[in-house]
Length: 481
Image 1 (spheres, rainbow, N blue to C red):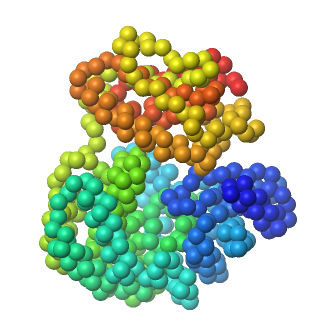
Image 2: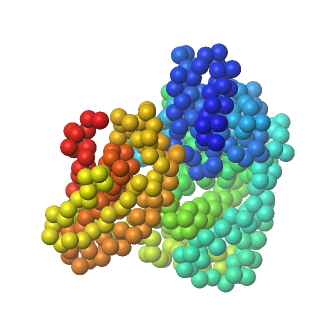
Image 3: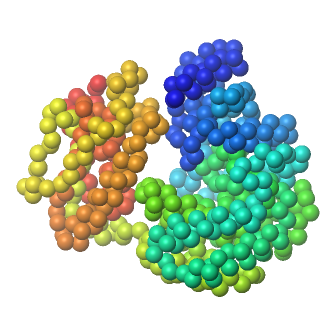
């Protein structure tokens, strides 16, 4: 299937550009089921998309065509072949707003604030101008963020976060509160476009200007939801005073485009911020606690911090006692507080992580303890079978993209973290000094190298312990393949 839709995208590119695609590179996968490629010819480039869900494709194309005519900040649609579930859109580069968040350190620098102000300005234009003459019949799975949509999010929160994390609740009382809360939120003006997943990973930055992507799940709804999604994005950790400044800046722009009562808007804004938090916990619970995906598990503490701020600072104008009790229980719990890395940094433990080739044998124990882990990576789809990757290693970007796009490497490593982490905590507590973790593959070049590097990052970030990394085969070759 992957070769088939890649070839179809190449043909669509040639038909549009009038030149062949000299380079077709898979991009890192998104949270959904869509697969993206960057296609480049001699003079033109585009992002090719394969989406298995025809309704999602139709929604994206319909919204984009409408907004291209209005010159709103979304990618241009170049070509489409909906019979084969593919389309080409403008290549906006590789820089997201999230990439600037990763560089910000502990503060929130002025240049980042400038970007966010531009983002909220453009958001208002898309939500208000973009809603006019839009075909909401293509929205999927529902045409509006209505009570049913909210209750779906609430139930995901209940079953995938509260139950899996062990937070007790009165189910009937909580159900009653969910309905009361949804009915309250629907009293806001819900006649604008709501992108549904408006956050920094879905905002591309080009020459200081933002462009919005991945809005195929959008529908009719309240202005407040997308703004709250952006400003209360868990891992963004925007300071409270900056959020207020950005809220005010957004309202200055939106008020020029439609009639807004600021006091009423702000009242419902905090309600929609809580609704977004509920949706976020549901997603983190499903992807993290249920599917055991490390990225989502590591994101839960940031979402908890948002709730801690919320229960201390916000007075909702609707009575939802059981929901409020549950939120306070989450805020008071230390269950998801990250490991204290100063403890790991001061511990006696050193972990030795190695990549190796099974042709040369499993590495010997150098500590004298005779213990540790050996993980076999040969069940992972091997990029070394393909000519473009044979001289590269698991540290090269094309190989990393291949492994993330065409193998189950992330699931493989998430399961390994689930095994290794409790042992590391136990060894730190018991003042053990050594632990070995070895990753082997056929040549010790691609899969094992990537896995050893990933494990090293994981251990340093989560525990702060000393890690010694060795790539046995690659160091023998001086990284020349």
